[in-house]
Image (cartoon, rainbow, N blue to C red; front, top):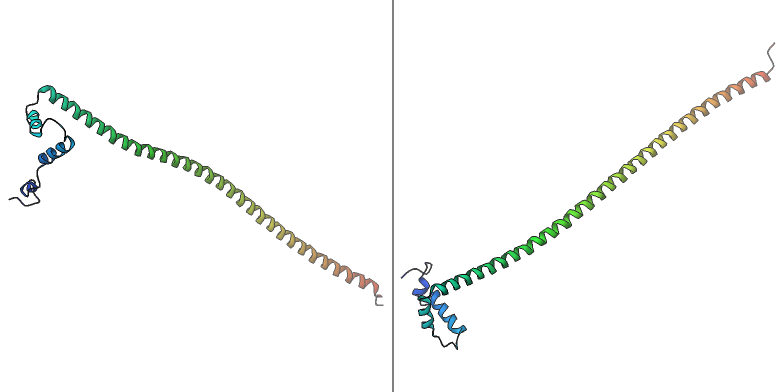
Length: 157
């Protein structure tokens, strides 16, 4: 006897062959048929070329249907992937436009900040200029006050 892992071991254990299972299935599908299973088997062995051609065409038709069903199933997935890719492309374009707008706005903000800094520097420069002028004015005022006081005092004789 063969070990159970080898082909044909199921037959040795009494489970039946695929042919036996096929006979049982046919008998269950055709319980009221006038043709017995053995007659069907006999007719299958001595098929005419026309019936073989008919079975061949049926097999080709079944294979074609299966192939079309598989292709249709794959096409659904491919179509969904195509739709998803188009959505992604649209999202990428939208994101690119938004990124360009953001970059432009950021550039404007940077320009505004630079202008503000320049204005602050100028204010600082004006403040320094005002302090310098104030110091000069105090110096002049002090000098004038000194001169004025000097003129009011009598000249020593």
